[in-house]
Length: 178
Image (cartoon, rainbow, N blue to C red; front, side, top):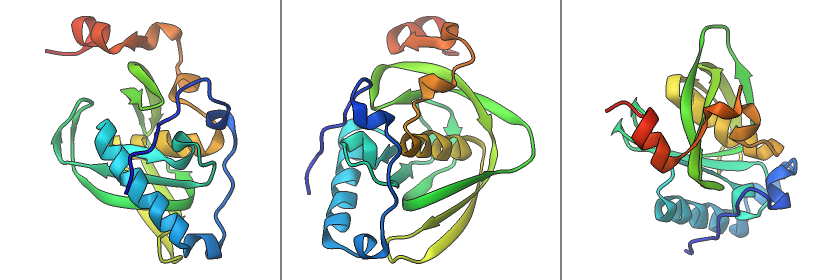
């Protein structure tokens, strides 16, 4: 396993629409290795989600893993390590909510983004089997944030105003609740 370089805003791969993985690619040793390396990278960088384009691999694959409890965003339920290949999001009716999001590809900053809070997620698992899950609340936000990377979108593209963008230090000093 290896820690991969997370590319940063300005790198052209982050603005590409990632291509779907074929069934042969999903079953390949190279995809299994990519997933292992992405997980190690996620842990090394201290993230909760990582999309393949963030490590300069423009394919429709993302991983999410969150410990339960309080993290730098909110009090959250945990989400075991998951691999999401060729995902499709289906927002469901209901109120939205906003969070101050951060991104490994935009280090040292965060921005307030409002998103739907109830989703159905269709995806293919590592065995190539279609799956469906339901996500609500902060987890729904995480799925949307990570899957945006597969379409060349960064959270800053979803800001209602640039006044809702801050460096981490200023966020902690002036915005975060004590």
